[in-house]
Amino acid sequence: HVQLVESGGGSVQAGGTVTLTCTVSGRSDCVGWFRQAPGKEREGLAHVYPATNSIFHADSVRGRFTIFQDIAKNSVYLRMTNLKPEDTAMYYCAAIAPTRGGICGYRATFFDYWGQGTQVTVS
Image (cartoon, rainbow, N blue to C red; front, side, top):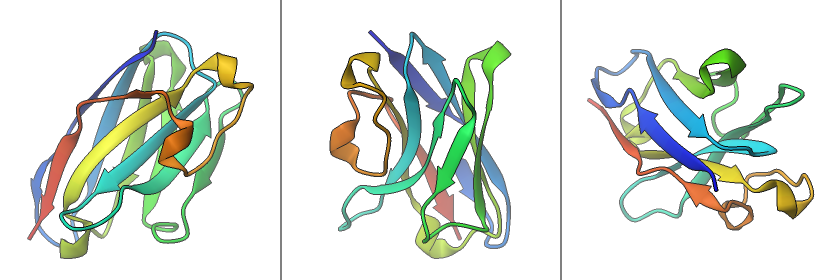
């Protein structure tokens, strides 16, 4: 069983930078970041294969958001720069169980485990 805890959210001015932390307990072949704003579907932002450090970013945030990890700290991060009011959302990290066969992607339905979320508000 995989447990994930997000932290680092809060209020930030437009143009600012926030780095979110996802602390992962357990084993997963894929860890991803998602967000959900009021009235919108849950949106995949980025994901990483922890074992290989292969990273991927959605077109919508490429160039502004960066996913990276610190294996020693069992943490996956999302650095968000040049934040805009439309980035305001609840941000979640999620993991896919190894029994899935190594799949990874932006579809929320791929993911088996979810954190509680951390709110990011940009004004």
